[in-house]
Image 1 (cartoon, rainbow, N blue to C red):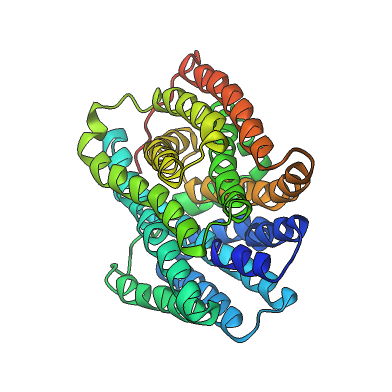
Image 2 (tube, rainbow, N blue to C red):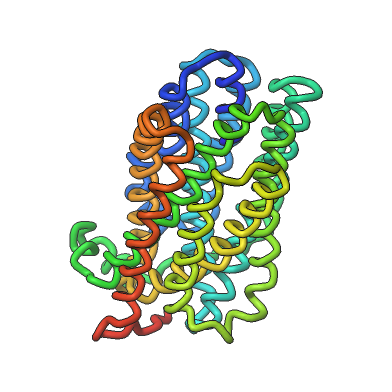
Length: 370
């Protein structure tokens, strides 16, 4: 959806600022409701929240199938963002509760991270190919099938998965979200996470514009996106088997350094295969980075409030995804698409320093078991 809607809008002649508003709409609804949804998952476990997430994702594709007007597309983007965001909060919380050690948690977050990687591999090629061959209606019809298929997977999950104890519910009810931001380690990893989110969001926003400026077809843009997602998928498939050998607190330092270099050279590459290579490098680095961040976030979260911490992470992510595309649109108009890549490279350099602060913290993070 994040590929199809901007490409459709560009084909209709909308400005870069409107494209920024459209991309921001993916984050608006989850930004406003994620915290309440996080508490909701602490109360109701896995199934009911997941059914809600599936319904939102399905309805967004149905809207786009029947209408390509700007108001309808903006609504669909918001519902799609909420569905994917809410679904991942529920899945991450439930998966984390099924393991007890830091190594197992790194492994399980790697398995969970395969979901968006698989979706990111299938979605862009499916969307670009169908849009070029049959139009965007066919692409949206195909995208509506994907959340429908996930219903069958939900039914295989045990009924008591993710349920909280009485003590955990009391701890969650007595705490305030603002108190979470007083935890130094949690604040630092949340900022690092925002930089990672901003990096792939810049890539998602700027690549269609870069492809449009170079007269690339929708299929070519979709293939580049799929190179990123495919590399992320492969590394996440391998990561569970090597997680025990990785010093997961050092992963953000190394990964953010690599990202800064990739973003610096990305807009300078002239050939499609070079863009695909950079996209694959981004996929590999972010594929390793995200499970590490989730493991550190779990270690830093208070007992009984993991769902709320995941929701706080999602809220901050969605707020950044709401505001940053507007800035990207302005920045792209002033500095060009290259300016967006280079600005992100500078921000990632600051993230490297912040990651070192996490590693060198005088109070080490202690893995927490449920």
